[in-house]
Length: 327
Ligand code: MG
Image (cartoon, rainbow, N blue to C red; front, side):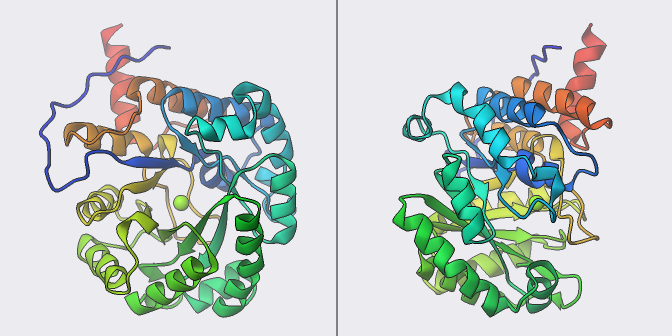
């Protein structure tokens, strides 16, 4: 199926950046939450199709304990399937393409580097309870665990992103104070992380809180260049929150093609912001993303067929249905 979507008319919003880097998370954050295991060949094709649709940063997999996340137990195989498609990993990086992978500890970092990974992510928590439930240790102990991982990755010349989950609300602790988010972000950046990605893991943030958290970070000297945002759509606020963050100077946004995924360890979480919904909004606001929306929608329709259910993305549904109505 070829989809040649119309795009919204452009009404440039001067309060938004001219261009945004989309950090595509479907192959990792999306697929790790799937009940079924997607074959490695399909994962590799998904990554390839996302790059062909114009996404330059595609978080590819996780080198987590396979027993803990069996959906991504084939991390090495996925990277080996991708390797011949893009020259060497250094060449891909030189061409501006990034294929980050999540690494939970030094063993994961070692596996990732052996597979050619040049950009890694660690996963911290802004709250004590989530750290204990998800990482099995206190918030500070988890941060200590990441220090050698970040140092080792930087020593090898890798890019390092640190996810910070539960930045806006926690299912056990309720609202999260901005000061706690700031202190965790400060620690991770001091360790050497290049950027922090603020996760609204249970999707409870609203736009004023987004401004408050970003203001608190700015007051602590953490500039927008070091910050990405990762919103979930539990209450339908992901896109509004993302646009608010962009109006505060953030230029890196996490989203998931087709809106797949959430968090397997936070039961109340629903899907990631759909990349298509984000691209549609940014196209209308005159913000460059480099994404070919038609190719992206085709990819998400293809992936939805593999997953056996339709994409939750409204833009995917609208454009795919529009296509059919014109046939
Ligand atoms: Mg997510």
